Length: 593
Image (cartoon, rainbow, N blue to C red):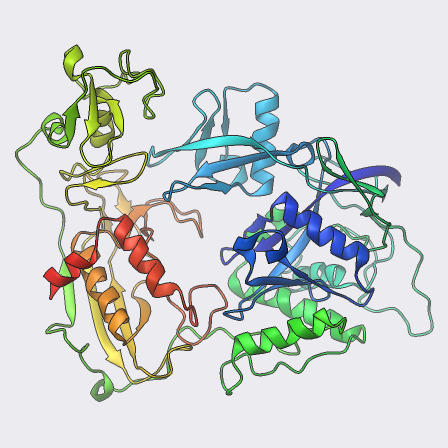
């Protein structure tokens, strides 16, 4: 054993089995709650620090995050990392998403990026971490090795994550974070129970705490073995030059397993994790709330059951679930006679064929159609090549011919953003070449945007069942079916086969006025080949496969355990916004009628 310090990062488990970090401010808030809460447990209202997280509450006793409006429950964990790493020094690494906002990397990835940056490496390959990306530090970009899609990244200074100090085991080997070693006799907290359950249910193929002798329960007459634990230091680091005094509190001494040990688990394995946590609390004598109605078979709403537990936790009453929520993907069986057409639709099926070759305008002609000439370029950089607009384009690749100085810079007619003409032509050549152009800064679409969705069939009809949160209407069921095939010239690897996993895919909308409006716009998106794409799956990591294309669908009929189900009051509005970002508006819905 040695005295050492570690950085604490609180993380939540998403539907893909990946641990996503909370912000430093939220982690500080949770650590403060640990120091000040009742030993039996407590809750943390995340909206007190970040208004965007106002629906979320963390129950520290059961180690779960609750969403109050939907009842969604997700595991959380407390992870430890080297104080000299990025989170300990206050550095955040983020990538720019399609909405133009910044998304933080997984903590393990961010630490690897910061380490490579501090060693002044020109680039970093993320393949060893399970991601098919190349980080280019010179251009501050992330490049997809398969599709060659390029995104901006940034290194942002923020407050450091909290520091805890105390006796730590001597590490046996390297790795990101603080590896677990032989720690002697285990405690009976839910973290230790969690790791033991995962090991028992997966045949020992996952790295765990590595104890030689592991027991689930101590004899009734034996006292718990004395143990020293990581605890928040009396001067926990809040950021550069900022400190906050706090009293030390004893917590579980067992470090959580590394992210890689849980990221590859299947959905049943992740459900066993949640069950193990509840069983650990029940076995330790913690009073339980009989929340047995989360499976949707009774009038008790999942959100109401979750809120009940939250309120009891806030009153210092420990809470755990006596039954894990049940996943309900499909509705009860429906006979053919009960399946009806969607009101107002004279059809119930839509097919797409392979993309037809476009003839006519060259890339230069397409780009010029949307540009206005700029006589005197401003003193700013082109955001595509990052070179001054007053100078030549930084693009040196093929497919772009020379241009006169008078045409070297153009202004997009609708949004007014200015770029090198050659950069816009190169961007168009790297896209779908469908006659449309999208501003890389504000995402304004010029022309009609189409995608590279493979050929397939979309069916839609009404079934006589109601979705959670929509008791007054029936349900529109959409069935997508795309077979595997060969990639065309618009795909990442022309001539190479692509797979189509999980088809047919069943999705659901309420049969309401707004639900039918969304369906009409989805039909437009289907015709424009924008619902699916061919690329790398973010769930499985498989390349050259059919994937969703940034228009979210609900694939759970009677539950919302993964975030892809109901109730979700904002879902229809969110889909309308996502379709609008693809250039599909309500005017298109009128044309669809």
